[in-house]
View (cartoon, rainbow, N blue to C red):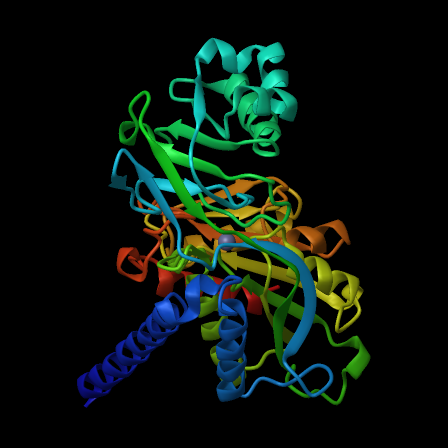
Length: 429
Ligand SMILES: [Zn+2]
């Protein structure tokens, strides 16, 4: 009989964990499907994702904190690429995302190029740079663009070229940069006057013909939406409502959107997986409330510069001093090499708590402490003295901000273990 009970328990436990991972997979797969357009600014992909998350909140039964709504909207400028995009070099139509990437602040360019290829020496010659940046010179030479080869450049010189020379040139000419670096897309909101394109070095030969069809669209006032819901604390007659502490669990749901009509950035690890974890925790705490209110926030606009969280701390739906602790989640789909905790050095007591819980449960192989960093939505809360951790997983999947951050490339290696670690940590805060 005992054996049978044990077996039933085991089946129940494994089926519920299995169900949990299945649900997290469904959420991740949905959010990074083509129907959400990379959760960015083309075809309202981010708004579709916000609505999907709001519907999940509703299904779970989360409470609404304000205005009888889960949604907090704000507007922001953003540069987008909703139109067909082509880059042809010597009759070879290059593959966007694979052979080339436009800069997030890339402007429009619909032209067969007349260009000059700058030598490495010329790139560093400030007089020559000034000349090319001068529109008078550009007209005199009758050129519309320059090609720059940054392969082999490193350290400070590469930094200077990237941060000063290239943006300066892109305000006067079309710029094509030859590189062998991994492509890394992001979101821009200060578009250049001309196009700026990064091309894999082996796709170009000297004097090749170049033609482009790139049309960027600058949205002055794009509507973005944070999604906010709550599981209230267990009612307790002895504790006054105003004394009830609140824990925040947050994850950004936006990603990089599209680059041209056909290419989208799925953002599976970053951060469909974090939203999946947030929803799993919401599900769990709805069924197992604790002595804290738990507020769940799926932030918009993180990739444009932590905009959703910035807006929230300016217009919080509850006083920020009520937040006992905040846990921000990103990149939850790996974990083979452990997790990193940003702000670990700032909140050592909580960090030790997390570590000792992990030692007991043996859930992840490594918990790496990191200091303060302005690299996700926890940042604005930290700035306002709200205690916060930002937790992300580490692993062999290095697909980040590129077209390969897909659902199929996710392992979910430590997802369930991390769920156990996070839920026990939150209950213990
Ligand atoms: Zn992210």
